[in-house]
Length: 216
Ligand code: DC
Image (cartoon, rainbow, N blue to C red):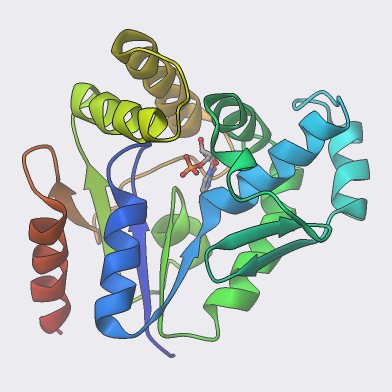
């Protein structure tokens, strides 16, 4: 099997920044699976649908085409890259991701992309459900407060008004739903390499991962 590196963990643990830099250093591709859930959630919002209704989702799935071009996320030909990065879509995507039909639909897409190999894939269930057989699996974590601070910084850079308290609350709500849902919850398995990033810099996390990759 070609190399697949999986990086799972809760919101704001640094998965995206770490995975991008890691992929760049290794000359690998990078797949942000959260963007796929966010794309579906964005489409539901566009159509004023109910994110927890299976019928709405059936209809959306039949009519959606998600394309990932480098860093750009396209839905039916429309660039939604920044539109899917709002707290509202974050919350909606977490609701959508609890529905098995959404997970089944996105499972196939993730498999197709991942099986081409030499790729870093980040999400919630990549090492536990999508590519459990991957050789290198990591679980990134950080305290809820630190994850809240990171998320707030990111939102402020994009001029999205919010505060630390709300951001931490949002993160906790999402974590709870993502880890207690029935279908492929966020889960740390024994064979994942656990990294607490609370006090680490981006470079330090990537160095730790690169070190771990050297062990067979
Ligand atoms: O990583 P993110 O915040 O962009 O993900 C958005 C939501 O998508 C997250 O709250 C849970 C869901 N998700 C998932 O269930 N499984 C994945 N592999 C990736 C994301």
